[in-house]
Length: 482
Image (cartoon, rainbow, N blue to C red; front, side):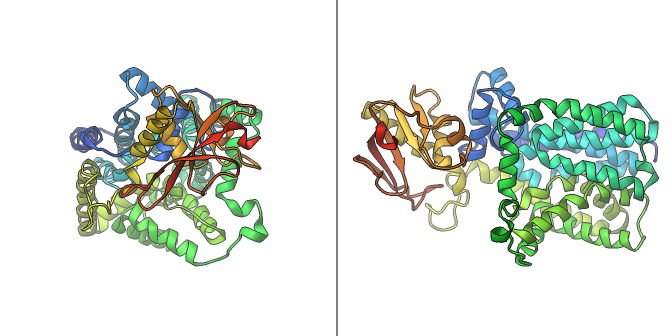
């Protein structure tokens, strides 16, 4: 490895601070409601645990810590960790690039990561990827230091960081595949077996509370993960074996990683297979390609979201940016121009999310981020007018925002009882209690309830996430569900 020094760090801090400040200003000014997942993470943080229905616990702990310190549950504080975590990740990836390549490569790597399309979007939200990334980057840096120094301290620290990454999102598990493959491709990734065992023990100790929580809660998070890979449940019914799925997933990666960088990653992979790249590249590809390969297979068998392989682009950025810097600077410049423009446009789009449209003012470009809280306020106002204490809904999106927007309304929110395994967190933790007396307000998108009910109000939003939907509010006896 080349000598590691911090000549790149000062310029990187200046540039990254400017980018992060712009994103924080956008968070302060945006009218965007919390998305359903963000509202759910906030709710998890109100009851701290070592695990939750669909995700490990770190994001909930972080949101709770920040909002408690701020003394506010406003969307700004819920989302504030996002841009700060990405700045930290950029600096860690720069440190890796400084060790493997050069200080100049480190600066460009840090800036390239900070301007990735997926980072530009994630910096205006709070997501499990955002929480996972800095710990995953730290684990990679510490793992390389362990291979170089044979240090038990860095081995333990690498295991702890990987454990924290797993406590943010289970996709961090791809790191272990990379750590197993990398030594076969590069001497710089070879770690003594005793130190690898030490790291695994530190990892196990870090994630043990979440494993125990899952054991005590019917492996709830694992069950949800299997639901996402739905072909596992019923292979005969679910497996589609369609080339359209992987083609769509791989095409989406040009938007996730950026068109030039993903194209460069493909070219770099081909060059590596032909043995035309330098020593650090195979090592880094070992931590990049497994996630892409696994999710591509998932897309071939069933469905896959574009961000499911996002963890690949930490090592992927450290691999492709220095390679382009040395061999195709013009293309790297084009990449910065495209991704940098997006970094400027997205914060502005967030600020004007309730007005930004193409033609029809009701056809908002960011419709999914607008209208949740307005619907909740209408539902809550109707419940208060009717003197109904409990609001019942089946739709997860409706429930998520009711709990958040109505957190100070002194009302109770419950999930409509459904047969079978609970389909979401609210059905698991907040089902309508059997034996409840009196009437409740039912939020329905499926017509009238099965038993006697009084229709109260029909809401048909003209814009935002519920545009074109019909939401009917009913007064229903709680005994309607037995």
